[in-house]
Length: 274
Image 1 (cartoon, one colour):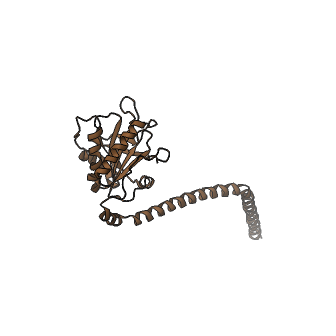
Image 2 (tube, helix red, strand yellow; image 1 turned 60 degrees about the horizontal axis):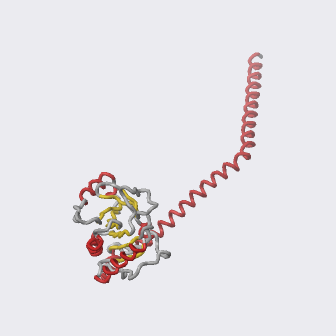
Image 3 (tube, helix red, strand yellow; image 1 turned 90 degrees about the horizontal axis):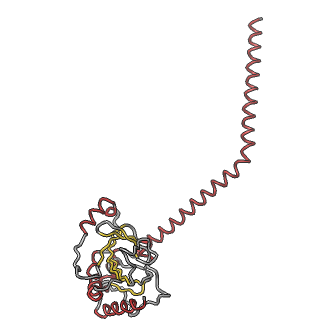
């Protein structure tokens, strides 16, 4: 009798406890479920906004990379070499007259490094952060020579040498020969420092006021090349900039005597106008 009573009481206690737990579980689940609708819209909205922004960024990056790949494939080394063999790097004739200031394109900001490690942003204009009236005056005219491959170094000299000989006594000009180094390994800090030491060249114009400034641009310059419409990397690009950093004249490849005369004449005109 006692045993049967104990079993009955035990059964009732367990049953009551189970019901109590079920009630607690059901209430908790209902409470959470009831509270979610008020929180979910904000959560979903935040998540959707983040995902939309992320996807938009991805689409933009993917589209830019696709454009870049198409350009690089269409203008690869073999295409450049084939074109170079046809005209020797003379992709176009130099300008015969100055490009009007109103239609002249601004030279994109380009970070360059001297062989001693000093850095500078081209072009040098009155608004440049680097300009210091005591050490770096704003030039009236700058000749910027761009070399993307070693094959164009002699081409650059065919322009810069007569420019130095003609305007060597002027203080209001600047001459920059920019060599582009796009190999990522060479851009690493320790290797870059060693490379700049090796590339350091002696100054052969001690008696000249106007100095040939050899500088180097490290890293990827696809966007820069795209802006100034650099197509063939095997040739040299010669740009004459005014005081505001606008491209007022340009030449390509190896200079002809006539083109050298045009460069010098346009430089003189630009100096008078500034």
